[in-house]
Amino acid sequence: MATKDAFAGYCAELLSALGPVRVKRMFGGHGIYLDEVFVAIVAGETLYLKADAQTTPRFEAAGCALFTYTARGRTHALQYRAAPAEAMDSPTAMRPWARLAMEAALRSRAA
Image (cartoon, rainbow, N blue to C red; front, side, top):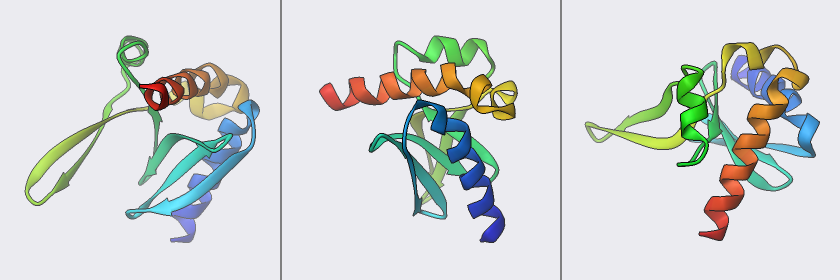
């Protein structure tokens, strides 16, 4: 578990350029909150950022995979997209993607 926790901590550092970050263990992975808004999921060694109809085209253009999981023999998809590989290099590189995730999360709260 230490390796998973370390990766989640690294992801939190990447997102911290936009504000206070909180990491919470959940379902074998981690949830990441930015300013107490749920913006990301860490599953395995992948950071998935919140997406919606407005931001999905940007994530798709960058080749970001959709978050899926299997439960009770069925595959489910959530509106989270893998962060682009180049965004994983630094908080500066992550900032525009984190901003998209925050915007999508805030829109989903208002809906």
